[in-house]
Image (cartoon, rainbow, N blue to C red; front, side, top):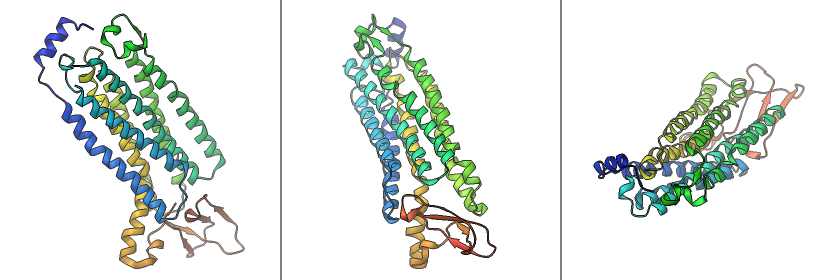
Length: 333
């Protein structure tokens, strides 16, 4: 595809510009953080002898997608990405790599949200709440399924998506507008997913400090919503005449979103590690029951609400209030 003369002049005037360091540094920092978070999650599961659930497998899927996305981004850099189009030796190869890299984002961000919903299902026994989880999860899957086909078959003929010469005569969908719309849906579902457990947490019979700690853990996830909004705004900057250069910001913010979401999804397990490893060293084996949420116990004649997860180590007893009589709950929820 022959570039407009104005574009050629601009790119030649900025031929030495290179944004590769932005991609390399961001990926070198964010991906290890996501890996550490997932490893910590599984260590916590092992320490608590807890069952590995679908939420854990989903977070692994998200991590694998993030690794694929990071690998694709670095391959783009090695093949002329993060520079202007006039410097690219093989634009077809670069455009294919960009498409593959963008494709990894879709399962990554979806798997994180499904992992969170599955974790809620594991923790909260309410049937009505679980119905809401199914509805939200179904909506996420429904708007995720069409995204890969749209990305791959955006042009007729298909090769117009990566071959500049074919792109001139190809008929292509307005990809920027479509993925801006999908990105907006992504922001909405992020907010919904993070907000779902807040009313239930508020009603927990725990002290204010512990309650605000739980709230703080979930509220940190709203940073992901901010990142999602930034990514949507950056998508509008994509240009078919200079894809390697204009794709840098969406590439970076896509990985930021997925990796930060993975870390936030694993945050609840960090408290388990703290209680089991740090406090245990300080006060001995009794640390397993130290500084945990306390729920009022009941006598044998009083009615109890007993909610139990599939994990024997995650059993939590919630009973009626009896003054000055409390039971302690393990740190392996």
